Amino acid sequence: MLDDTNKTVAEMPAEEEHKEETKKPAAKKPTAKKAAVTDASEAPTVEVKDEPAQTQHPAKKKTSSQSKSHSAKKADTSSENSAEHKQSGEHKEKNDIQDIIDKAKAKGSISNSEIMVSLGDTDYDLDQIDKLYETLEAMGIDVTEDFDDDEPIDLDEDIEADLENFESSESMEKALSQEGLMIDDPVKMYLKEIGRVPLLDAEREAELSKRMSEGDEKAKQELVEANLRLVVSIAKKYVGKGLFFLDLIQEGNLGLMKAVSKFDYTKGYKFSTYATWWIRQAITRAIADQARTIRIPVHMVETIHKVTKVSRQMLQEQGREVTPEEIAKEMNMSPEKIREIIKVAQDPISLETPVGEEEDSHIGDFIEDQDSPAPADAASYALLREQLCEVLHTLTPREEHVLKLRFGLEDGRTRTLEEVGQKFNITRERIRQIEAKALRKLRHPSRSKKLKDYLD
Image 1 (tube, rainbow, N blue to C red):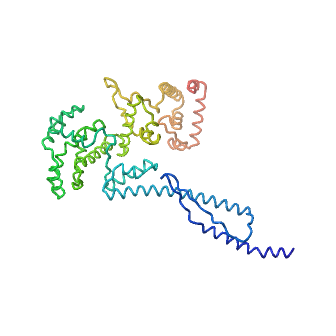
Image 2: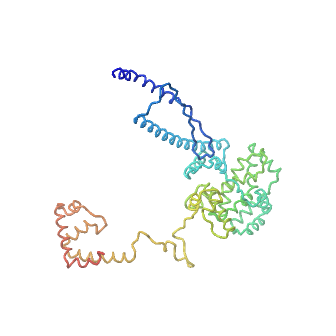
Image 3: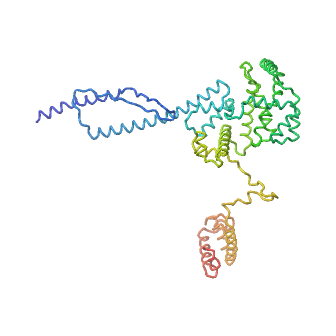
């Protein structure tokens, strides 16, 4: 028996050494291999192959403490994997945004479609996208608007057709009137002024562009003045979106001047096509900044425009109002995002907006004030106040004044015994006694019966 015990004790160090040896291979597990990720929003999966422990000793049964330790290690591993997944998602978002900024810095500008493609299918919060646009604007990087994919005709043909009709101020007035635009005197004067400048042919445009690249300011001015008709043809499409026609033209002119300063004739495309991007971008930015009481970011204005366009198109096709779910399916967006866009698109209405033919009433006159009491309650409160004043007048002047101060009957602010005592230059205990005596008097049937009807 002793021999067996000694033998067991003698083997214990060997067993401990064996535990240490079996733990070492587990620490040297092969590097985790990432499985192929089919979607950018899916979490990367990890396959781990456990290396079997090689030992000559027979397997031993795990104790309860070892089992608990193993469970704790599993929990730690799962929490680490969750944390790694979260960090990898945040890291990916930062990389996407940084890639957009780097690309924009290299080019000096970036289009909205390039931003959306770079963001991919990841569900970014609108605040994050707004911050990205603010960062690009702070860095002096221009975000250009994209052409609509579903324009009825080619953009160049559309512009050329307009410019052919805009040879003189009379032809411009006629073309604009045919489209239902009200041409007032200031617009007529402006059209007459820009109609004096002749249109440029391709050779003259190339010559001016070349001179402008060499620093000729007169060539730059001539190129701007010759393309003012182009601004009018684009600005007329944005009438009715919150800005006057002349304001739209003015904003478009700013975009035209920016296009002239950035135009590179060596790339071979027409100036009108290049300038159209900058003119439309300047106009849409002005509408976003000035047309609404509550400012909406430029990218959201364009999204609202697309949602509205799809909604109207589906209304014509189906002959009924479409649901957010149907619009979401058509635009490959989530219904929640469509609802958010529709909510943002709502225009605020002033409470001072006139109502009726005579316009002697306003919308605010017909909107219930939730904070004001109902007429019946207001009348009841007025009668109660009158009765209360009559009852208080039956007390002594000091008792009446003490109750009014204690219960805030004069200005709505209640006072403490200390505050009332300081006002009368007596102790707080004396004020308490006066208050108790006054309340006892009010409970007398001769006085209380006048106020019982208001207790309900």
